[in-house]
Image (cartoon, rainbow, N blue to C red; front, top):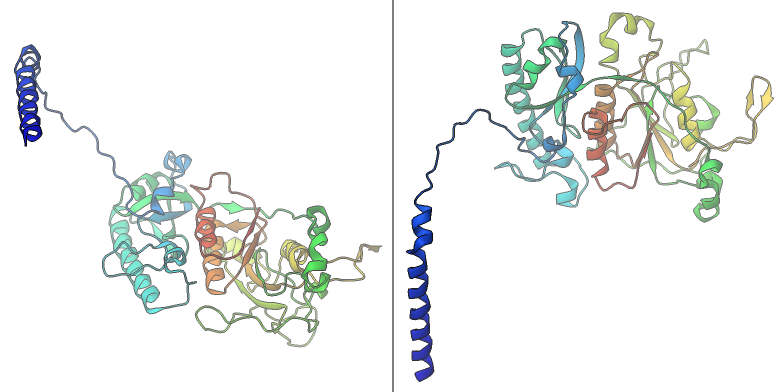
Length: 390
């Protein structure tokens, strides 16, 4: 009992000392300071969604003063389907990183896509009011979260100022690049553990974003060693649009196989120019250039004993993963590839269940101002295996 009384007495003494200090010379000194009211001169607004906070505008675009119409991709302030963590009231998470499941067209996913469509319509209404010259293209909802459009260069800063826009990025035309051989990368050392050369990569879907492929090429023949590919995540049939074989007199459009399992064109922005559209020979997934056939056969081409090029024997040859399935996305015309078309193809690759993307196209200097890089970042978060990005 006495110990408690002493403790209370000590506490009272300390409290009294603190009060004395607080009311002494220091307290008097503090009265000499006065607060000055602050005036707000500028305000800074930050994006709300996690994905939007990564996006950056292309400052070269925003500084232009000419009225030349330019294609851009506008990142809106919402998360794409593959990245949405569930922070909007009434809409459960759809990101596979949160749900632990791949995207598959669930009711929650369809509901959130409807929400994104409403967000886009509201933004487009504001856009046409602020910048009447703007022309809206495709929506990018699965892995990007924005829209493609064109507008006069000197109005792009006005586009960025519209509520809901967090970045204006160049919808730049990229150029095809080359690839490397399996021996150079050392991939062939793994073949004995993967069932031999012809089966290496079996069970993996490789998506090619390039100039398309020539589907009748022997590198893509079905030799019967591959099983039927899995269904798309939405349960719909895979697209197989390579058109008719122009080298034969018969009408014989290519039918996809257990090797070349699908192909579709993504050329909306590219073909919007009449001159480019007139020069494009094939508007299907058929290769108009040869680059896509080269890169896809490098990636997944069958083993061939003979490969004559200009009369010179280059065989035997094979791709890095001859046992893999191939799904083709033609995003490049004869002159190049637009970022919005490529981003749209990445979105489709999600639905198609693609495991690996080969994108041998230029660009990517800044991952935060490049729509394709941002789309690829979301694609990589779907818990798929890996990707090959040039």
